[in-house]
Amino acid sequence: MAKALFGHVVAPAELRVAEENAVLRARVRRLEHELAELRAQRDAAIAHELLSLAGDNEPALA
Image (cartoon, one colour):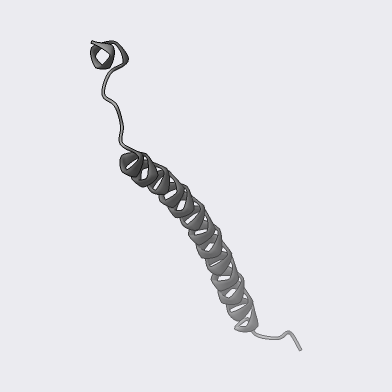
């Protein structure tokens, strides 16, 4: 009857797996955020390089 009142009793092994799962999900979120930041930095560097190359193609005024 107590189980019916408190719901499913979770085994310690199941708790450990659930905790490990939560830790791994948090790590994945951090890594995805870091990846997005690195991609943005890379894209900005590429755009800067392309703009600097495009600026060098203008004829010099004599």
